[in-house]
Length: 426
Image 1 (cartoon, rainbow, N blue to C red):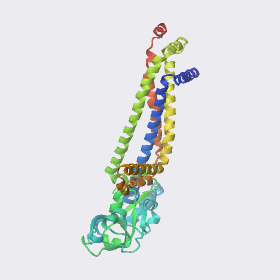
Image 2: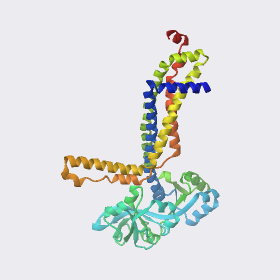
Image 3: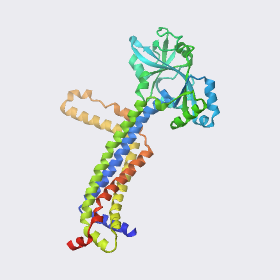
Image 4: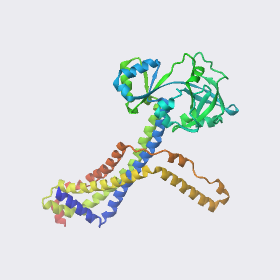
């Protein structure tokens, strides 16, 4: 093994001075760019997707939902099983109904009304983290106070202190469908990482629930887990204790949306992986030429006792070296870029604004007042990229393996060489 590594090092040193130098450098740069790009793209996409998923799980769907059960029965189920009680962080009873909300100038939009306990911010850490108050406070203690999503408030033209009416509400059987007596005052306006929540959700307290949902309506119990990935295990344990229990996991809510996010991510990864295909072809062609250029050295090594498989290993080790160097450089650069995406988005915004301002000044000075920075870059910068170490390991490993496969296939000609003919030609 020692002499194989030494010969490989000597070959690499000679190659850096010969025609193969450019091919080797381009291969390493290509691998570096491929790994760096893939890590950056996956980190940014994870950040965007997880901001949606976190908002849905913590505000909308909860980790698990239990329907048609009494509160004492829920508590008994949780206390009966040690695994369940250990993995549940909070249980929140809530009421929910669809309706129409009317704001200023009689603007009507559909709304999803959710009745929550007044102390929800204290008992549900995930809800508190994902629901950010941008105006007013999350105050639902009074019977006539309501908290609206930012897009919902904008669509009906209201602000903190404005009066809104719930004109129609699909509540219980003892609640009229249409009523003009459901008047509320906006105590706060919130924002989350998911636009649909911002544009459709409104929250009221338990005092308003009897007026909105009626006496015969039953609450839904939203369960938050210590680890949301254990939802299926906890669901199975709950249904073992009570087979008739209706338990719904967060995976069953917005199933189509979550599936679309997963497909989008997989397609993006597949497209970027094509970089490795291009690099692999480049390495394959370069190694075929290198084997041809080194056929006399190969013949001499074989004549001195080196087997064809050992000589083959010399070239494979060169491919491994290229893969390790390129992939590790790409890994380092990818992590650096991913951890500083907010500064990059802000820098891109200012760069594009500067270019637009410059060319507008040259060709249309009268329109300079209309030139503005793109506000979407600020939105992107506010969403932190998220690194998945499993994905990083896969990307780096693929970056190392792809040149290894290309070199293995390209240097197979070593095994087919007739050493006597090579030395005769020389």
